Length: 235
Image (cartoon, rainbow, N blue to C red; front, top):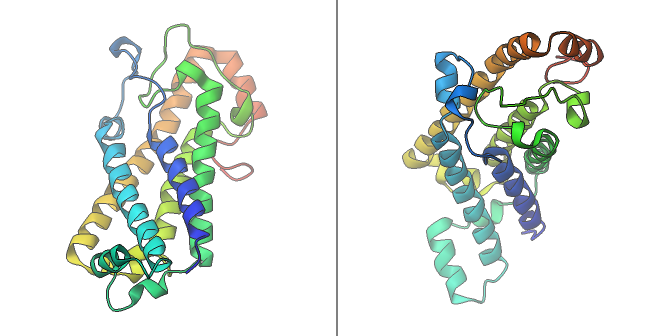
């Protein structure tokens, strides 16, 4: 079993942690904009924490099995495998194309979010808001698409799903996704990320409306230069 999976897992989880960790405290109540019912769910900070817990558990489980499999002489390795893998299923853990794709997308999503945090600075909050002395940022990733932060979220959460649902992953090969508990946890993750993703996509339009009202001609010039909301050349 290739130890090369370990650094890939680490980079992916750094990407997930960056994506789901707010870079600043919540916006003040007077800075928040009126929102939809979906937005009330999206801005809850407990959701990202649950996603982190689920994903870190799966990542640590996979990394632990890989290390134990590569150290068969250690007694603790056999104890670990007896709990985290059954009937030689640890041998099925491998570097697959879906693993490479999933971890790459997750890490890429985190990098995009990091660049957005840096570019917006204190203006970036997990809540839809116009902060005191707000300005329209059109540089960095915002010169490519108008909502790159949301693109980062989509890439990250779908990258995680591709990784763990694909062949060669610990979750799929060693049993977690074959158990009632594992399937229940996977369903919680799916519901959370689907709700958050759709909520963010809905928020894009409301953000455009708010920025259009606040910055008028400056916003119109930006839209002319950067016509796509999420995917360069497509959407």
